[in-house]
Image (cartoon, rainbow, N blue to C red):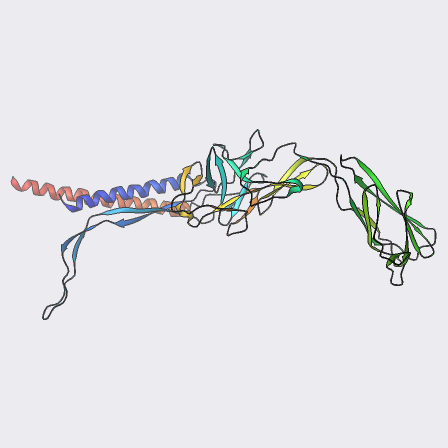
Length: 396
């Protein structure tokens, strides 16, 4: 049979693959986090018709004469460029800006994805819609501390999450007491403090002007009284000349070291530095590093967990597993797990999604190229058939 017949067949197969890939790209033009693919062709083996010869005395060299035997698909590569962003305003939607993949678990297998359209299930687990793959990360420990070196676990943000109460142990007085105030003037400041059970009470400090400075009393308890002396520069010391230090009442240590008493201004403030009432989770937000921070009914915010990300030496070697999921392949390298924004991994944007990076103008052009390539290969086959027909008709 004619070699051109089989070359045409290989052209049909290869361009059919190109049509398949292009059609899949167009079908996924609105798929979140989808990366388009492209086909690379490669010629097959060539048959040697005449071997080359080197130059000799009195005779020049000759080049090889080879006839190609068709085309084949050398590979299908993935275009990893960033897709455009779409703002959704949904707190659970996340978009990766840069390199990296979300880490999810389905059953016992770990997958990776660029699709950040997450939701919560009945257990408060953050999951992908459709197949329910669970997003992986690190849960926050006591006080909202996150250890990104710990093993990955399922991320949960449950409705009704409670921030435990903690006792107030420290407070501080800052600002300035009016040093020109008349003797006998009383200035009072109060602040709300909490015990270990979250019960609130008031801590009151009373400052009474004396001939040499101020007398500080906590909760009207004379046993807590401290006499402070005004120095020439408006600073305060204890009556014996030592630093102001602090006073302790009800287990709360109140620092006085930042207080001054210069003339003409009264800006003194009393604030606690720790302690809180019990709080219930009301809402949450996700920052660029993937930390999920909850806002509680007690007015405080605390980290609940952090989304993990994976990166690869060769992300083009990842294998598509369906459902916008990818799995590590033998040529992708092992996943490097870590937080967003470090180790070459991109940052996260909450309330947005990465759209498909399919370029329709390019894909429709590829459709034309594939169609014409297929059509041309079919013409090679029909022409070869006509030649064979002429050969068969020689016997008539």
